[in-house]
Amino acid sequence: MGVRIGVLDLQGDVSEHLLAFREALALAGRDRGSSVVPIRSADEIAGCDGLAIPGGESTTIARMVDRKGMRDPILEFSGGIFATCAGLILLSAAVEDDRRFLPLGILDATVCRNAFGRQRESFEQDLPLEGETEPFHAVFIRAPVITRAGTGVRILARLPQGIVAVAQGSHMGLAFHPELSRDRRLHLRFLKGLQG
Amino acid sequence: MKLEELRFGTELLKRGFASMQKGGVIMDVVNADQARVAEEAGAVAVMALERVPADIRKAGGVARMADPARITEIMGAVSIPVMAKVRIGHFVEAQVLESLAVDMIDESEVLTPADEQFHIDKTKFTVPFVCGARDLGEALRRIHEGAAMIRTKGEAGTGNVVEAVRHMRAIMGEIRALQGKTRQEMADRARALEAPVELVIECAERGRLPVVNFSAGGIATPSDAAMMMQLGADGVFVGSGIFLSSNPSRMARAIVEAVHHYDDPKAIVDASRDLGEAMKGLDIHLLSKEEVLQTRGR
Image (cartoon, rainbow over all chains, first blue to last red; front, side):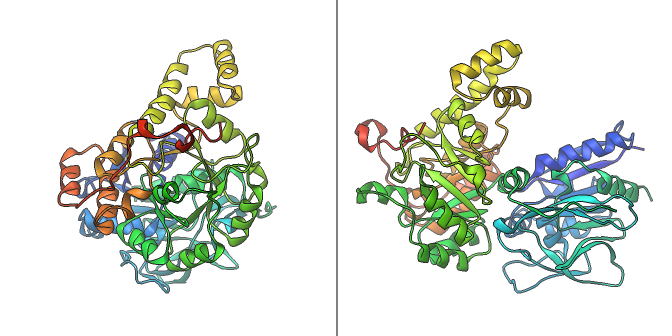
């Protein structure tokens, strides 16, 4: 059956997310009848099965979400949310040492922004991933980490600095950018989770 | 399971950082208060400077990298990325900024060039670079030197968008003209552009530059910003346009709105209402040859 994936198009690497989901749907043999679309207004959210919140500047995206009246439609959204980097910060329940914006509180987790430092400290690294024999090549850009994960949150990957990939129901929260590398395994897992 | 080692400063990390800026506004600021105003308005990053370009014009003399103390002060005030400018070719100023852990370095014609022959070899740095360009050849030469992001030059500090438009149209038009050409024709074009043929082919295939391309140099109103987005910019730099307007906080917010809703005239109307005075601006034709900044570096 086809699925509709919306990518929140407020700011950040939106086109990379659109492309990655189109590739993943083709790999899963589910591209027929499916669509991947940029979401620019609040009333387009409910019609999706999955919603991606891309990487970008979390403070900027958070302000846009509120200015465009998207907070309630996202909170009421019944599908799965795929959130990377800035998206993960938005999805979390709390942000350490930062009162600049109110996160959505969908993911029962606390995050720490820029946990590895500034851009100079951004890195690429192979990451052991729960349930996989091959590592995942992960791209961390001014990335956050998860410092606390609630009991309903499954930990998919961690580094010495903290947790970097989690799942909660059909939601997925990632501190790194799978849309920037070629590996589509996490996208495929997310799509699989939407069926059930 | 064999794990690959940690890697820093790769091309993917540099270009990836630039991708995270897309759809955003990067604002020039000269102190911590301005940086906070920019962040509050929704800027994706700030450019830390000693003076905004219009004031650099007025001050005259040699314009150099900002005082590290000023840059550090700005880095401490906001959580969004902080960029800073170095003179064209001044690789030691760039080493200083990298050591300060600035998030991106702008090798900029707004400052007085330090080398008339060579730009900085940007592949030697962990921190990504953004460079100015007026046409496709210049953009591809900078990318070949390691720039992770391009900004069309425009004419900084004028509040006059005409040069920004000229440069964006030039780059987009030259890329459109490549499409449908044979490999042989593209190799010929690459020679004329004085650019590597692989990059020329990549532009033709993707229908755009291989890296993020922002617009800069003369954007002073929400409509200016939206026009540059409609012409194909991935985002905009606003220099003097915000903090030389009569109400910087409102102007900053309005330009952020206009960049997001660049294809929605009604939203641009709302963003433009009661903004106060935009910066005064300069007629490009009244500038003497020495006052033109865009011809620095090629």
